[in-house]
Length: 141
Ligand code: FES
Image (tube, rainbow, N blue to C red):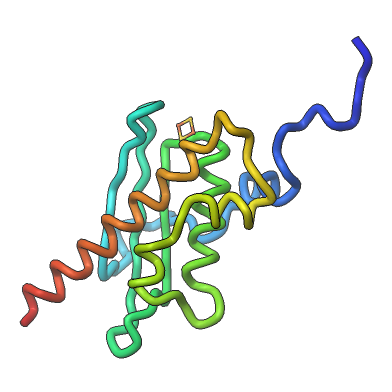
């Protein structure tokens, strides 16, 4: 078989986020989340947790941490997701709720089609975290 330089299926950006994931939640005990969400992937059974901190005034996400028992594509996707929702002063909760997995995949420079379902995991957990935040805010009133 002829060796090629293009055997790797993932983009350089995916590799970077997999090998050096951003915003991983290492110390759950001492992290004061405003909202916390869990999601499971029905296709592979993997699980993801996302925690957020929200600026009460602007309703923008000021911090986003996550942890997963998912695959490399899930790690890279959620790492990118955590960057996207916190960059440029943070994304509004409304915009974050409407974030599409395709937008994450685009920022990653693509994903193999068989790994598309992995990019949904972090986003599903983020939605749960935002809904958890809304529930907690309602209870405070
Ligand atoms: Fe389960 Fe990728 S195979 S999240």
